[in-house]
Length: 212
Image 1 (cartoon, rainbow, N blue to C red):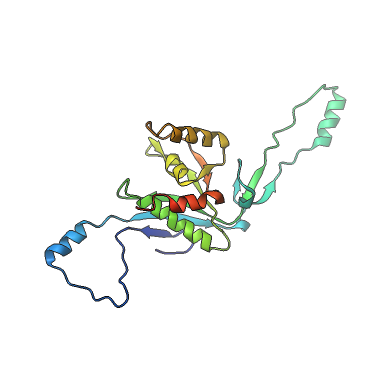
Image 2: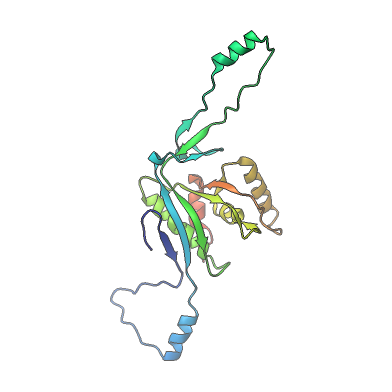
């Protein structure tokens, strides 16, 4: 695995490290072939680091520990009041005052590629990136991902939601929550948008499917 900005982590359950002092026992050619066949393909997770000074802007409901600054839209209230008085307007609607947030340093997942499905390799890849983010004093476990439609058919929202990620749009979290409560008998909702990992869900993610 290469651990620097914009790099790729390679995750695979077939990787083992020798035990210190142990003497390897050479098996038969037939055994070696069986072991090679049993290897599980590795997963790749592409990511990059967003630094605080880059002023990465997002919208939505996101916890304070993700926010470095708030960009408040400038509204010239004085001019609006003068226009109201001049034209004797009874009322006027103020412009949308929704805020833009600039995030603190964090990692953003770009993509996860796994040759096999339902083997837990994608989950392991995300766990490894979480461990890296926790060890990084700049990011402290902060991870975001922009969920999109895959192959024009499905969304990765269900995968990330089950791991503990949440949408910045609360209404989408309600949709995913109902999907989970339904027993996931139907296809995952095709929701898209920004998801982030709440710090209270980090332990849940690290314990997710521990036996895999």
